[in-house]
Image 1 (cartoon, rainbow, N blue to C red):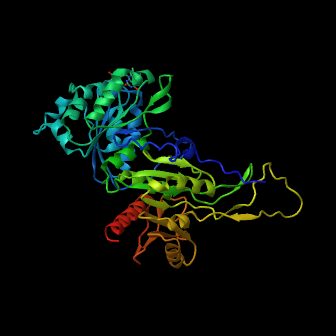
Image 2: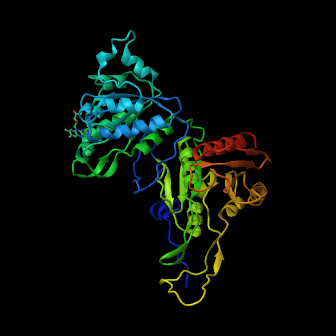
Image 3: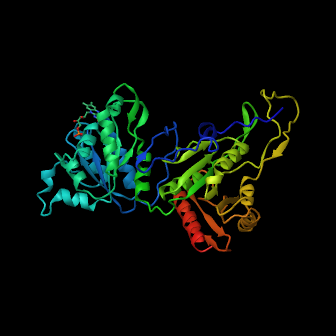
Length: 445
Ligand SMILES: Cc1cc2nc3c(=O)[nH]c(=O)nc-3n(C[C@H](O)[C@H](O)[C@H](O)COP(=O)(O)O)c2cc1C
């Protein structure tokens, strides 16, 4: 019986050897190709939005109710949110809802604000670190594209100098109409970031492109826009999640990795300006916005996907819990139970990271050492034997560390002999620390 190695999805659709994968269009046009998986976990929130002033414009579409969840997520991430609603948006949701969730008054009328001594709409626009319009109707897109300022929201958009993110949501035909498409092109020319709507069932009964991007993805775009771009020009490969090594068509060997640490590393690298390829085993997570996802199952598929993108990579972060062994043979039919014990011969999987270390060139390589004993000693041994630049040592026996949770406790060990123990922190914060140290290594090798 032979082992069947399935071609990873990303290689089927865009094998760099034959046809290079197009770079993600973010930040100018953030493509919404990611469907929300049922029951999937939302993205972990990072610290980028702490004390940032976000001006949220809500216009009159059926998706206006999703602005409530957006405000909740932005406030949870530490942002101060001021909502501005168009007159028509108030037909779909009351200002009181957004006021209660944001803890700030909701502005609806240009002339209400002029009662203050300063000109209110100028101050609102000037104090914003970022303006987000979600949902954006076809009408508001047209108004901004043509400089019409006949209500508070459209006026603010002419005044502001802050980055503007627009998340359209509308009927499929409204979205596809040449007028809307031309307006979107104009807005991109102005430098505004557009979050493409998702495809799917629409509230109007039609099926197609027009559904507002998921609130978590919109928040990711806000974070990405406000994050320093110190990884610009880098191509980062991140591996994440577990492997599933098939025993027969219905059984496999796997491990407890959920992919959360790897997804955080991919999301933060993208937010800091890198082009990111995420090679992931099966997880329940939503792929980060703007990241190229290669879904794989086995260690051999993971190796194939990583090697396909390796020639262009400048940084590789191996956070996947790669299976050391696989069943030596995969049965083509379900194995029937019999009396007595049963054992499965295992074959050694390749050590992907060690292989990359032998052909490293000028790349920076980062590994993870997930251990339950003698953590630092084992990590240091791996760092040198695999020719890595850094290893993230992770004692999964500690509370708050390791698989499944949103936090981790790690020590960063680098090739210069430095050891940096980090306290309990979010996986996003660990990802930031990893890239900070990598950049420091790059500057002073
Ligand atoms: C029930 C209903 C749902 C609507 N949904 C949308 C929508 O999702 N997207 C959109 O662009 N317009 C939608 N419209 C049309 C807008 O409300 C209309 O174009 C309005 O002028 C938009 O005003 P505003 O952009 O100032 O908020 C909808 C209208 C109704 C009555």
